[in-house]
Length: 219
Image (cartoon, rainbow, N blue to C red; front, side, top):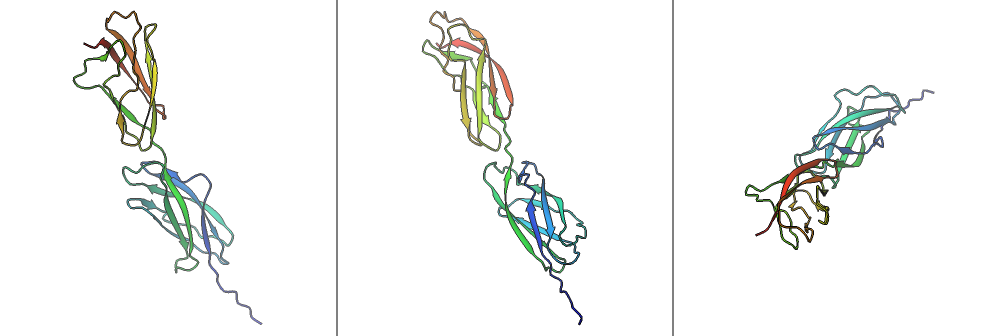
């Protein structure tokens, strides 16, 4: 009696558990492919993303794999310009034999790493940080230049005794601009003479901007 074992191809692609977040400029993710067929075969890979503008670059040459074997490979993922961190898209991966048999399909969530960035501008017609006895806020513009919400902390150094407050905090969503939330109240004995302070802004990513500001009495 001659027994013939038919060829039964099967492939599975899974995440290696390292997380499927990519750099805003594009980066590699690690994936694992396992051969569940019953004869040595070479896997052919393909994939799509559930949003437009994404580019996927698979390895050009995959090795011959024995049944039960697994290997880790790198997939280059490039998101579109201006894509935001936070929302995820679906990455659908397909592995098959060269003749299309043994098709295995896996769908995984794919996100973008947060890229914290901000800017702080002094107006062209800046006359200083003008305050009255009741206080005053500076006409400075702070903009979120990153791809996710950003908490920016502001601190003042060089404040004379009796002046408050010396810090503030702002949360800006992507693309949002706002002011510096410090309503500076002078000491009760301030005679209106100009003073110079350092204002430092620090965001969640550790970026710092320090500017010198002159405090003047509002007329």
